[in-house]
Image 1 (cartoon, rainbow, N blue to C red):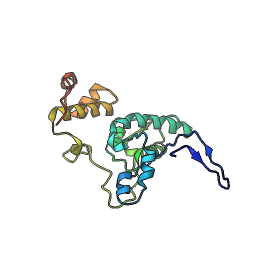
Image 2: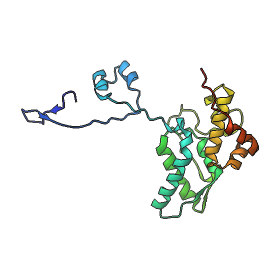
Image 3: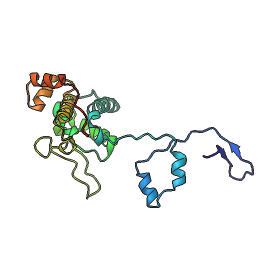
Image 4: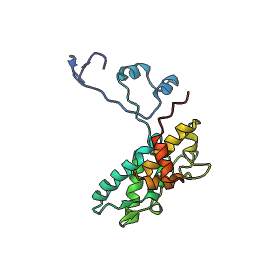
Length: 204
């Protein structure tokens, strides 16, 4: 890896190579190095360019588009017309924490399509597999009330929180302003006013 050379097994001569190494992991390698579980020299040889891909639970705004994509592709795989993904189904999908990342979303939707067996896929057709780690927090969280999943993620800056909630409501509603306003418990005029507000200054 350092000089682009290798020696085949049984050979006395080294050969040069022109290769690019791509490595991926979900482990915290700096923590493993500190604990003696990973070699520091290998880490720095690999770390030419680092790309951090956030987990699905950190980018829930992607769930509606991913769900629509998986419904289409999985329905084609199952040789059946893709069902219409109802708003309550999207709300249920957005209320999950996805310990199994995107693969969990895909597998959940495949089960749901088979279970729905019709033209619509609703919240009643979606069930998440239990997480194997007993100590993990429950993946099912309410979508309304003081224990809403997103509450702990919202900034204390009110203007920033408003923008995040409006963006999430629009994502759930697929851009439909009337549906987004109903989700937020406001009228369309209030939603228009929020959209017209200038971006909130970032919290210090």
